[in-house]
Amino acid sequence: MNDEEKFEGFKKKLIEDNKKEYGKEIREKYGEEAVKKSNEKFMNMTEQQYNELKELENKVLETLKKAYKTGNPAGELGQKTAELHRKWITFCWGNYNTEAHANLTQMYVDDDRFRSYYDKEQPGSAVFLRDAVKIYTESL
Image (tube, rainbow, N blue to C red):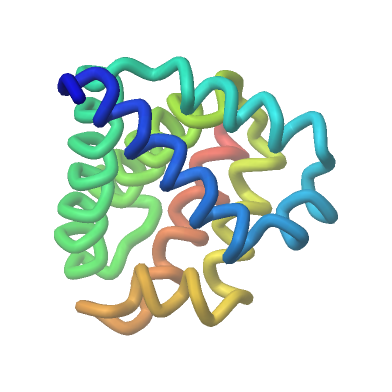
């Protein structure tokens, strides 16, 4: 099996794992068509694009950590975090919608699974991100 075939298998496994964990829930929230488009976009991603996506995710988390310490979601670092988060979700979704962005970060606060991901190093980070994104999306 060559590297390209391994990467294709890796992407399929990630989609299957996501379907098992969140499949019913995301289809109810976003609809079958949105999930299908997202999965197709992911499956068409090259390994380089995937690595860029992971790097962008890491930048979001690193910047969020620094921004949180400022205590100011409207500040430069808070807004940089929101902008990076926008780029990250647009990479995954293929398009951008301010309402969907704001709603997504509200879900990060409301859903224990997502909140624990963002809050694992700094409790309150999910709320900070939500607040930064709310300010960001209202300014667009």
